[in-house]
Image 1 (cartoon, rainbow, N blue to C red):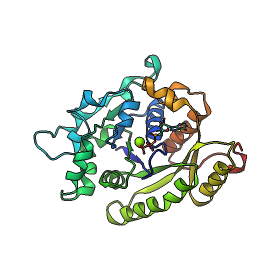
Image 2: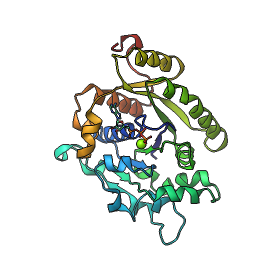
Image 3: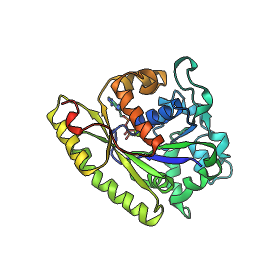
Image 4: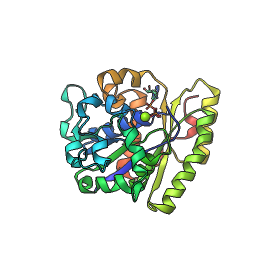
Length: 275
Ligand SMILES: Nc1ncnc2c1ncn2[C@@H]1O[C@H](COP(=O)(O)OP(=O)(O)OP(=O)(O)O)[C@@H](O)[C@H]1O
Ligand SMILES: [Mg+2]
């Protein structure tokens, strides 16, 4: 049975998609069988994985979640392989994706009218859950019905947070939503931890926010700000594939190893983090 991990934060541009992509590919590089789910109509994860959303328009997440008979497809037809590593370094069968497409924005409205609308994704994943070690879901930047669906079927949630004050303050709202989900639809949902993103050691502010995050939450990763994600997207490569020796890749692989071990504890003292 797979473990389902949602990568969520209602705030936009905090590196949810980059975090999902790196964690999923990193798990595949460790030999795990992984399914990524792109739950955002912007289809950033789909594009980051080197796919063109229009190529899979009839076999996307929309065909999985819709209840329109003409559009609905078997979920297995909507799962596409993703090549991991440059020059076929890793076998293709380890990483897969259910891609997204812009039509997901329309579907979201229709989902509202359905019975048990919070559980549409959970039910859809049921038949294939046993086929993967991990399912990693990239959530959209809203606390929408799609994010609620992801949190309602996940075993755990990882929260990327930009190391700035407003992102840090925005976490309260997300925590309230997670608490509601735990009460209403998914009592087993765990918060695995917070990942500080876009960290710049040069800025005093970044370091101050890092200390706050570490005090109040389980800070499982510190991801530096670099140009690598922007470079990788042109090649459809995550940072762990593109530059496995870079400290950004190491930071993501440390999280991957925490997921595999089931122990969400960052190594090293926060005071030793580069300032
Ligand atoms: N550590 C980083 N350093 C520099 N740029 C980064 C880093 N992580 C992500 N980015 C870049 O920041 C932008 C936003 O990242 P990403 O798309 O992962 O955020 P998001 O939270 O998924 O956004 P949205 O809320 O729109 O879905 C992208 O252009 C990405 O390449
Ligand atoms: Mg995104």
